[in-house]
Length: 257
Ligand SMILES: NC(=O)c1ccc[n+]([C@@H]2O[C@H](COP(=O)([O-])OP(=O)(O)OC[C@H]3O[C@@H](n4cnc5c(N)ncnc54)[C@H](O)[C@@H]3O)[C@@H](O)[C@H]2O)c1
Image (cartoon, rainbow, N blue to C red; front, side, top):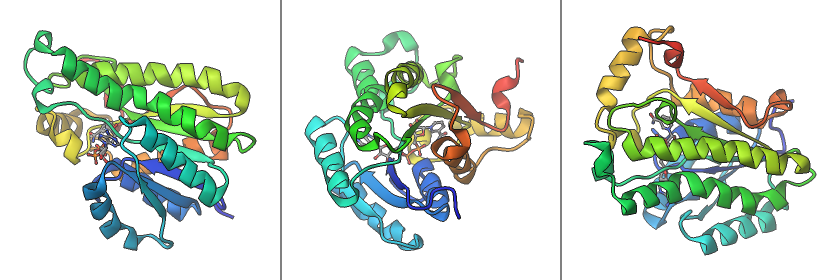
């Protein structure tokens, strides 16, 4: 029997085959999960439809722009109607305006700051609120994706570092408030991976080469490795773990200079 046999796993944030969410989707699908995907808009939906042929079963899919509360509610209502409940939820999405991801941090605008917080941090609260009633009695688990720029200054990460700090804090507060309902909430802090979002961060090529040169494992991590960590955090293997941030970064975050 596979770890996720018969479990319903909702994965938010697949945009293309490079997305971390797609790596997680493939690992959870291989582990036996019934896959549910959300996409940001119809254009993204068309791209996702081209990918899903690689999965053994056609997943349930619907639109869900996390800045629209009505779409969040409608998406989870649709999932409830189709499956009756949810066992696992992956929040693998973020956004900041290009002009906020580089330059001097003191030039951060309120609009840019607010948008990054809304999409990248607050949305974890709104999707957890919508999913929680569907998870009751099922040992539900929620996992989101964060980055080391929440803990330390990473040049160019700027407003997204602040949003990731809020996301990690949201993870702990949600773990506390949903714990009595048997729902666990954790974060994965992934090392840099070349995706569309990451390419918007000005220093990404430099980050990838520093990890390759200096990380204990002397290489970068893959979407699949993040997927395997997500399988751990979303399955019974981690039944005693909640409110934590797990680094999947080839060890780069343990280094000082
Ligand atoms: N790639 C990296 O180096 C790296 C490292 C650590 C953490 N992360 C995090 O991993 C997550 C996934 O990013 P990725 O690197 O796979 O990039 P990606 O571009 O493939 O995925 C980002 C996703 O966010 C979605 N999104 C943006 N705004 C949205 C909205 N309003 N509503 C719904 N969805 C929205 C996009 O549609 C896209 O699917 C993000 O939280 C990112 O910050 C990435």
